[in-house]
Image (tube, rainbow, N blue to C red; front, side):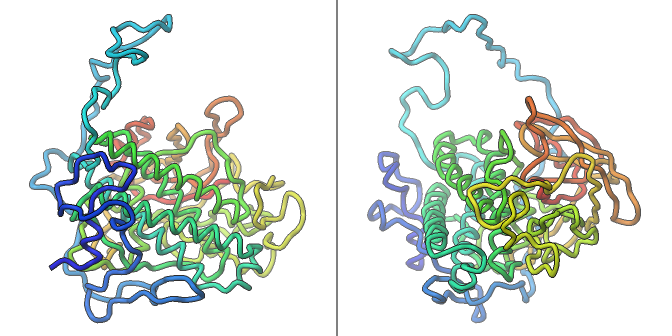
Length: 481
């Protein structure tokens, strides 16, 4: 017998797509608000599974900590068989030959004002459901992300008092904006659930790293970065163009959220000309460590979990001179890949510094007299060995198929740039932040970005970045600007 929450989770698509045929799941009784997925943790993992409570007028779970049980299954979900160890590199698609030198259409128009070509343009009725295993696993990953954002945005509002927010430079209006962003996540979770059907992953219980408002904001700008980039990386590979259309309309909202959290953290809202897209396994590797418990029989994912690359002197966004960040990893609140910078500095804090170029309080924009990072900066690393338990119920295992690390890959904007790795010990080393430009004076390395150790400086581009996965030794998140 399905619970009320489960039935709500498998109802048909939202009102904006009411004309689409109903998904091949339980027939909907209604559309619109009645099909919305409610915000509540599922209480099906046993008698000790945490429940939702009201705090400070906001809803959150009573527990946000590590998993304490024993996993009943381990590893990523697998298909009936695996055909090869990796995807081979092939030449250009032989049909990709179109070039228009004079700007005049070359083919007959199928209708007035309708140039020939395009996908999903032949008048077929749209079907807003995933259409392959690739689609399902990608959208399921997206739903895991939406669930944690829904809980995370609420949690800080419940955890911290209004006085805490005021001390961090945020008043009730900012709190209201964050609450609205949490409401957006309810809609996103509903949309993705409906495009997946009855096997859609459920909401889980999460393990958060922050103890202050600023650490919460910093964590949210990091989490929304890999949430956004993780979608840009797969959206144009989806078999279902209809699903891709709706997903783009939700992820455009997430991009705005990431910008706002950067502003609230005292970072510049826009520091690149192009946002970066990541393969699903990168996003899952960064998300999974923050999921503690999931309900029994929650749909599992197929994506890889890479070992963590610890960036020991990841710039502390709370310092007015970020280059003073310690080089031993002590200025992140913990060892997980997206843990925020510590905010309780005894010296060098920019939090309440009202000096142009050095302060880092909430603002529409800041110009930094000293950047968070710069070309030529020595960056120190420590990386984990594989075979570590991670993710929901400690039921996934980190892995790598790469050889010994030789390169540091910097993934940002339209580029995957490499710098040589100097190994200094067992699982330790350093490199120097490279210099380069996309176009004009747009420096490649900026913002919150993925950094990885690889065994090969493989040439990849935004549409085939996943070809690098078999060569990744460890994966990290760098706050370059």
